[in-house]
Image 1 (cartoon, helix red, strand yellow):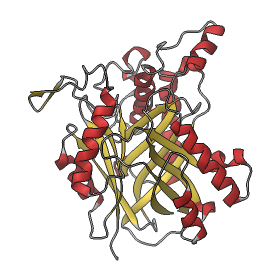
Image 2 (cartoon, rainbow, N blue to C red; image 1 turned 180 degrees about the vertical axis):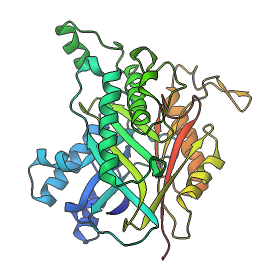
Image 3 (cartoon, rainbow, N blue to C red; image 1 turned 30 degrees about the horizontal axis):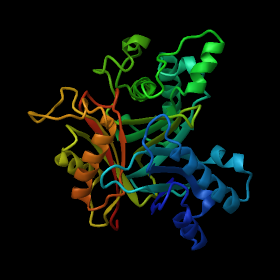
Length: 359
């Protein structure tokens, strides 16, 4: 397997000109594209339609370049968007290509497995059914990627549905209950269930520890490599599992670390070092951002959780984005808010993909 990594700038949620130029120049074969992960300048909430808008624009371009029907694009390419480019964060997309090329070497290089759950009904979102569906998809992505050991998995991105007003009305019409009637509040349960699904698949938690009642509440059960996002534009969960494996022909490696808080610059450097930092440089950074559950940051009070004007996720994304950019010198960073069951409370995962030097 050979994974290509191409990060492009976006002037707006529908801006696909940079990808079109790469395709027209022959630098990216559209037939090899398997995933797009990006940031849009929406609010990141349940009503953030920039994510669906971006997917629409990319699907239209790729349908034309691939010569396929519009609906066929999402059957072959996974799209993961996170809204919110507060502070210095820059709207962008990272394009991943995958081919079957291999090399006879023991050195581990970047691999990627992709899978998808079935569509979830509203009453399943944020429940143990949600957890198990994601766990099965993670296992499939693990197998597909060819990773040898769970310890070689460094980043599992899962994007799935939250509860929209329409979904709640659908559940009401059938007389079934949902985990919450608050669309924005449903992100906690959706992200949490997906994080636990990763943890269950990778052996970080036992199934006996799981219940509907603990999802989004008992946060001492978690995955150290999960990064989950929820949006109203999806019905199923998309799983992208990144790791390193021998025999891969990729020009990249991936590593991860745990951020102790949103100003943990040492954690940023640790992720880069874990990937095997080289002079060839950093290709992409993916991180989650969280407010301190105590309302204090290294002993000092902060108002992320008590600010009635700005959601805490937007504070956290802005703060962490500035810290990461100060280390890497690059503001085109994927920073997503909300870490339920993704590292211990107050902590957050971070992954770095680096270009390998000549070997």
